[in-house]
Image (cartoon, rainbow, N blue to C red; front, side):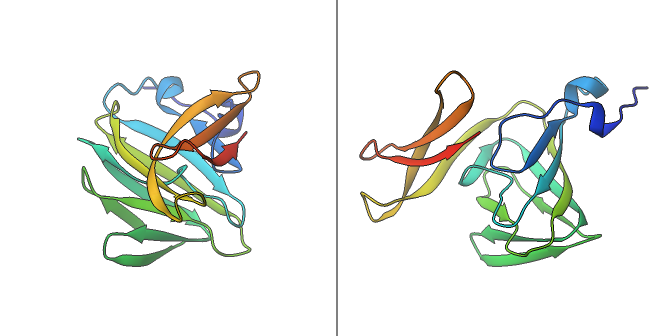
Length: 155
């Protein structure tokens, strides 16, 4: 048995205001566990994406998250849970003013990103993207794989 206080876990660079990885502190070997706080406009992920071989579930503790899915937008409110099958594209965004608090669970723990797509102004389309460390290791930057343009910057 392992127990942690979420506030005592160091945060990670993210598209969210707060992201704390709980898998290692809890000793979880078979599933990924992440705590998130999303300010207005924040997202769980850097883009619309799918994971190879990993299912994900998001429990929304407070606030409302709008998940962009292959079947349209789905709102998930406080006290609700949403699950995505392996390979299913999604992106959850806080489109409200109220801060979102949520847990994300993924199994198996280790998973490759199938593909991440972001809007590219140069291509005038949503294109496949990659993400790289930038600056002094204190920023993450997304780049369009079609033209090489920068599509986002996160710290």
